Each structure stands twice: as C-alpha cells, then as structure tokens.
Image (cartoon, rainbow, N blue to C red; front, top):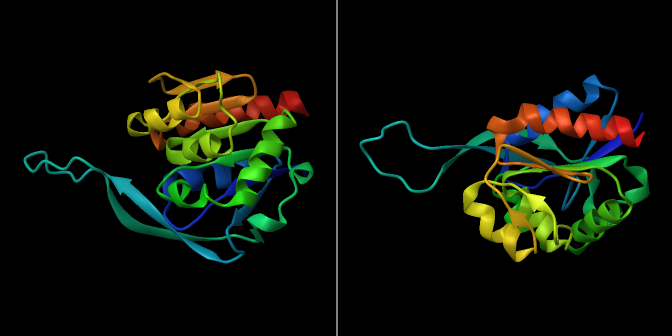
Length: 188
C-alpha cells in the first residue's frame, strides 16, 4: 500500500487534517502521521465566534481531537512516500523550523511526488523553499507567507500547479482531495 506523509504538530487544525486522514485510505493509501516526536498531538478547531455584534478579527482556537504521530521528523525518508498532505492550523507556524521536516518536504517536492497543502500549511512549503514561481492559494492571512516563498498567490478555492495542489482551508477539502487523488493515481 502506497504511503502518504502527513506532518502534524500541536494545534494542527482538526477539519484540515481528519478529512484527508480518513479519505486517503478509502482509495488504498496508508497515511503516515509524523511529528517533531512520535507522540500524541492536540488538534484545534478554528472558527470565528458566532456573534456578529462583537468584532473579533482573528479566529479562535478551541481544543479538538488528538492524533498519534507514529514517526518523528528526523526518521523520515522521502523514498518511503508516494506523496505528502500538509494540513493547516497553527502547527505549521512552529514545525516549519524543524530541519528534518524541511528536508523531507524538499526531497518529496524535488522527486516530483504529489503534494497537497491547505491553509497555514503553506508556511511549511515556504520554509522548505518549494514554491518559487508556483501559483498557489491559502487563507488570505497567509498570502504574504506564500509570496515570501516566491509563489504567486491567488484567492481561489483550489489551485493546481504541476504536482502541487493548494486550497484555502477546510471548506475547500473536497476539491483539494479530488485533485490530490487524481495526481496520486496519475503518478502511480
């Protein structure tokens, strides 16, 4: 069974992550969850509070489910994976500093394997130097991160550029996974 790498950390967004975590095995892919260490991680729910009468400029984080990483970033080998799925939330802001995560992300990209990324996950691709000249999307508040990585940011639900598919956030999960599954099938 082909493996898909899914890097996470504390504050990984629950909907970004779990949709792919359960969807990919439906088509025969094994999702390998990796983190800074092989341990249990906290996910979060990001949402705007429902009362429009009280301004709130940023999303709130609320505790979500837990997810077990079975491998540490330092133990990852790009040749073990058919592709990579990078979810969002606050985790990418912190785990992008991990040199082994940046290494394996670059190696998967350089090897021409499909990569799916949404929301704040773009921060990992920027840190790994994988999006120069690519057309990408992400949540608007991460547009600057994409541009600092040399990408061309567009505010569209799902954007495909070569073997990279990006989406803004969990509301675009269906389109993102449709494109990612197509890429994986064609690459096989």
